[in-house]
Image (cartoon, rainbow over all chains, first blue to last red):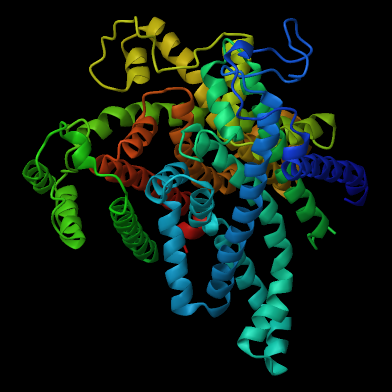
Length: 283
Length: 336
């Protein structure tokens, strides 16, 4: 298989680079939104409604990606929307990973009743339709950025817990764990210093995937109008507006959709690329 | 005996899971802010009216008591009354469930057909450009969830090249002679193929959006299993006998490669059913998922409870069926 890997490696590298580049661009736009957005993302002007993008006939100079039905600049809304997407991806992704991984490590290492309780909870969680669960939680928690993040963590911790638990079970059975115990390491120290570093690559790959999922969940919640107040520009909110007026102004849907598509794809490719690179079996 | 005990244990776990779901939904939705009773009454209703209605829906009792009453009802097939429509919850759910089941099953059939074909093609021409192309497509389909595929399909085949309907389940102008809610199946049985065509033109886009990620997983796992089987001795023997490569793949390797794929398809099918919630919303398809979102938006507590429990029952039911059929189909487990 050595020759086969030689063919794949440069392409996988390009994939990592392109994904990183796009995510860097989104991150940069999120950080510098107040300075680089050409217009106020909330400024409405009905005289400028549904202007097509700059390269089409009938475009106004200065509105490069056109305007929506209320005359708001699509590019500026896209840039400001990146802020919500990036915040949700980073905060929800990290928190989900933290909570899910801790529970997975405990279940896999301590076993016994701890494992029983956590595994049963995972079973129950897996029986919920996730989107419906998210919508239900937002209805309970109220709309807003914090609610979205809490909802994502509450729903998706099982994704980490399941995988990390299985991985910890595998690692715990290995000789080096026995050696650590024989060498006088306590249970906590064995878990943190010996097992965790070996489970970490799996967690890192999952985190990048989770960040993509978090962006999608936010978009879905915005789409059903349960995310943030409708004033704040979000990609999901833009998509919901674009879906309504898709026959009159397709660019209002296409622009945020492309941004969301590329971001989710980039997170997934990055996660896969990192796993391939750090997977000891493939290496 | 071992099999029987395994089955019984599995059934008990399923029961515990469903009970857990019921408890969590019950507790979560009773923390919902917003007073559904107040929304039902006309302005100018007195506090006494409100109390009467609250008592009618049992909302004046303690949460444990409410749960007991509700669970007792469910056991008798009574899921309560919807607060917004004042109709029987079970009736509402059963009225919408067939639409969702038809959509999910159509998506499953599409996913198996597409994923299976790609796996066979990728195995037939493995190591070449065909396989590389299939892998690339798989990677793309896996990275992007059904919600985004739905939007892409709306743009491509609803707007850019409008060949399919992107909204609703059936054209509203059509007269429907159906006596059940299984429109698609009934239209075929009654040989009203004009209606079948109309239904399929509505279902195609949401079904493809749901099917794409699952098709990619099937293609990936089945192709891997096929390639491993192709290296086994009995397959080499079939080749030596002079059978064509395609025949060897389809007749010899495929039956043995199916089993590992089956378990996976079962779990992934529950994800597909979960995906119907947002995909139905996206395509204004009148199924259970769309009803569920409306119920949450309207704070219709009994209806939310009923729908979530039905979804959970389907999820655990599918998993149970997969586990049992795996035990029955796998000779090592059957005799073990």
